[in-house]
Image 1 (cartoon, rainbow, N blue to C red):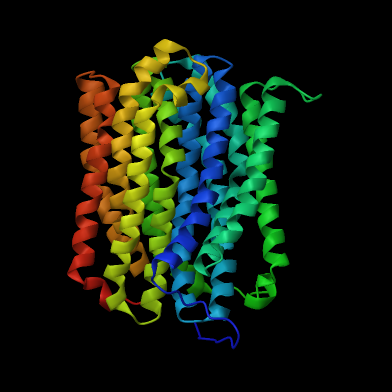
Image 2 (spheres, rainbow, N blue to C red):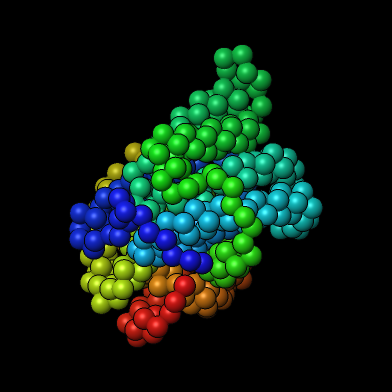
Length: 453
């Protein structure tokens, strides 16, 4: 792809603490809103009974499998856009963005087809509760139609973060959160003249919220003049090289994220064999992990963007000091979250309305999860730094190794020896520890300095 320049705009980033926070804090705000949606769904669904809360864990992780496929595309595209931003190649940014949307729509179509054809068979074989299976499948056949909106939304996130406009993410996510909460209340319980849809009401609410959140981001991009500045939404000729570049950069990340979440779905299915209470507790942990892990994931996304941008500027010597600065912020926020979670666990858990026995069962698991967040805050920065160098295959190899260890552990603990789920959730400690080692080694080796994307 040919280089192009722009006389009035410089997309190159510096590597100071202020720049790190300027990128990370808006990203964290954008990430936290979907997590609020997940938690809101579960709080409302919990009022339908503990069984509904448990089934929400299965359906939530299933949809997350496809969401992280989009996230893999997002991260791969973000690294490419950030590299071109570091090189100030504006024309290539617009071309990459448009082709990224086309690729995403192909994956969305595949996700819908698989949900209607393969998912019923797989869940029927895996779930012991057949009444819960029927509810889960009905829900997923509705929920999956939000995938095209989600994927385009993620591609626009990649654009905004890649060109250092992460502060604009909040408009779309705030719209999505407000709509989701209002429609959850209206459609699950049948308020304000809406039909009472029960469990499926959460699916319809989420689809509408994703669509309106996407619309809000589209309007912001237009309003800010970025469409004209970068040549977005103009007619772009199909470029097979651009498609191949996006897929080459993204497919290892797609596989990495998909394998990771599929293994988490496997973990939840093993938990389901332990009973409704343990599954409901674990679903709550997923919500808390997602909500309070937002700062960690924001610093991870910041690492991806800034490392790629700095390399694009021709400054490989600045990468390691940059990673250490981001690490300090990531670990600091994770330690603060860990302390807060352990100071008032009952206060957080009582919002699910499941009673004292549920809270007593959940607190030991919460303590395990809170420490796992600290380990995650370290590992995700190093893993995303590898993504920023352009060697996404390294991420895939790391994930494959880690998942083998993870699957062996959870199978032995939960299925073979039927140990308590507190021991099962210690798999998160193992997962993040194993993820850290090869990523750290690769970056310290300096092999990434010769890589071009």
